[in-house]
Image (cartoon, rainbow, N blue to C red; front, side, top):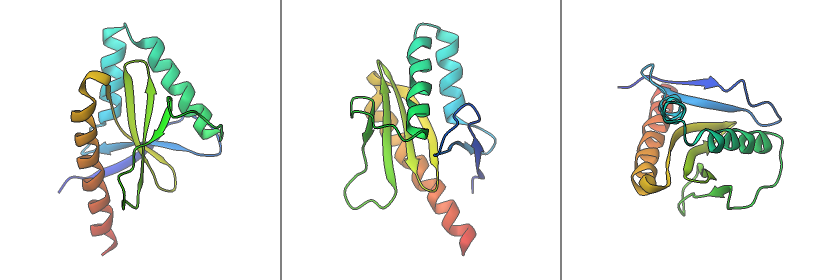
Length: 131
């Protein structure tokens, strides 16, 4: 079974905290950031994504064009998507916001499927540790 951990995102400061999901010492969100930094052409959008997270952390109201609830019906844990240009960031809300995965608009359907799979694995891991 995979080992899950949460690492606080220190760059985002506010009433609501953000953490990144780490799976067996691998962080999909960090990989996404590194990919964007390496490519270089979407750096401004990435900075805007962090600005949106900062606004969320400080309880600012945002339009659905930037921060959207994508939770399926009858799902208990809220799912959200942060959007800026071609970038997408997928997270869940528990006691804090948990960043799980980042992606691009052209791979959105695949990314959402992967996001939900990682979410389910993480939640199952939490349940097994409580038992």
